[in-house]
Image (cartoon, rainbow, N blue to C red; front, side):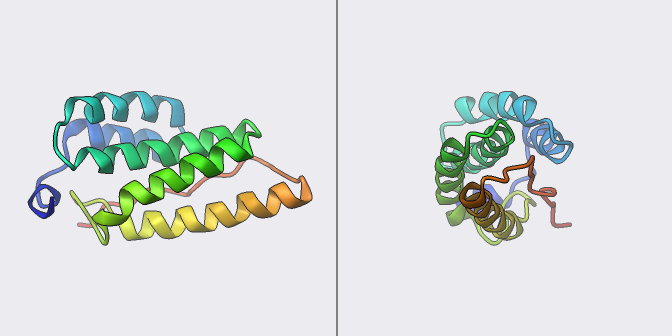
Length: 126
């Protein structure tokens, strides 16, 4: 897995992260699902983890807090082995953002003040 992380990111990952960063979570899902399904190796969990965090944001913005929290937990679990970075993706930063997002979701669910929220961006390490 470590050697896979040293590879250049495939075009689909770059495209999917661009969509994520623009708030195009549905399109990000479609793009990353394509490369996730085609990848036989363990690196596929990186793609699926990012995909699930994007879908979690999409679900939260549709007021589906329960579904968002479930997807967020699954995405974090998939991404954890890839810290601190993989294929140039700052996975550690994404996981910190996901944790903050989770806290916001829980807080907003408790006081019923859910408003559209997002994780700012996924960063590439140069």
